[in-house]
Image (cartoon, rainbow, N blue to C red):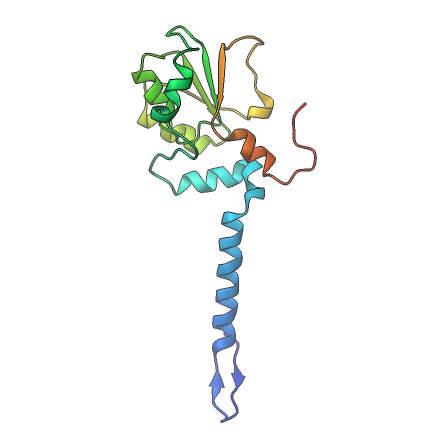
Length: 160
């Protein structure tokens, strides 16, 4: 229903409805930028549902390899936590690090990454409720998961 008011000259003013639309749009934009959603599976599913390109938030393999290569071996068992749609695991794979398991809370991004990189291992899993046995991995890379959890606004983040 469109709202209107009467202008001083007696004509109808339909700007109220337009102002409501602008306010609603601003609220939706804020929600999409609000880091408190980062700890929620729904936030990431929504984000990855509408994203088809790859993205590295902080750094990619080209920038990080000089730090990792001296401490990794081709046999290293690597866990990539919160892999998102990063290309880093594939870049590592191409650099002869083939034993990588990628996990993310978003089933949508996991499905997309499995399709994009069928040679890599992707598993939908909550990083705060992992089911791997102790000491399974030699090296763990956190591609933004800690930031996502800590920005979530939960005064008691799920680190049990």
